[in-house]
Image 1 (cartoon, rainbow, N blue to C red):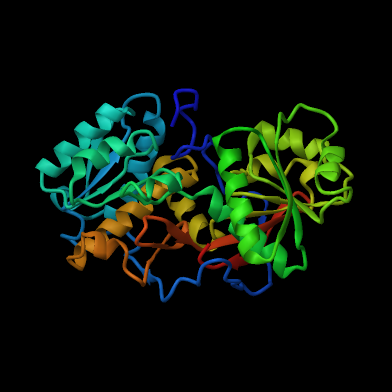
Image 2 (cartoon, one colour):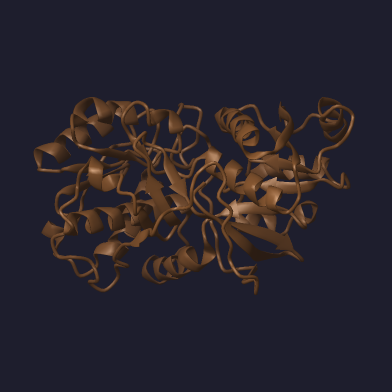
Length: 384
């Protein structure tokens, strides 16, 4: 991440706030879940890992894995919550048998030092670091030891890392797949001109072309600029598209949603959206957005709340799922690249996921809707 990105930003090159998916306002839909493969096949028989909590993990499963987390520095609070989430997996496991946590100090130099210390201590897999600009430093010292970065920057895959963060492409693919299944084929993208916006636009262009969607325009602009609906219409050939995808969260989302009020376009959103932020925004009524499966995330959130007195975010949940992965692969003596890229994939509290040989990650994400100030589960999209 660049220095301009805040300490509260989620893992990766694209700034976003730590997203919280809570029970407040969540209504479970009676609709059956569904899967629409889009650009990638559904995850095949994703194997569930030990659930943790109360000694369910293997006693020796994770001893040769290391978590590289920022326990000090600007992102210390985020790193500490990731470590707390990981501890829910290893409760009841002797400390010497659990994945070891090494402090990256939230810097490239600190991440490299943490990786060297972990490898010297016998680590056969490195889970971390948090940020994209720290990952190359870890790769430089990792050698043949697999590196699973918590970043959401797919560009790290060709450099040798496995990318565990929820990427802009995964949100785009989920929403375009669901929209197409609902008969929506003409979509515009509007985002702030940031790394997140740029990555989302690039992903939208690629995914639309491969999936039968017409991307009418990808506008990167200041959310405070006026005339958004007219700008979309003009850039879309004089006719408004059926839907507009807004990848940004927070104040940027609020501004864009206000500017789209009354336009009749279906609003689509990403994992960047925070549930507590959008349920009170009348301009987002009826919007659809991508999120981790609530039936997996919410029980984890409840356990975290009971244990630590606060709600976890999605980035904290990455720490939990990383520990699950380490314990599961360790128990099967598969802490290696082949084990990480196993065809069966994994299932964690952020849903089913599978690493590809090129370092990218496929994820099952849910589609939620904002209806009457509440959140309704519409369905699930597999392998995005």
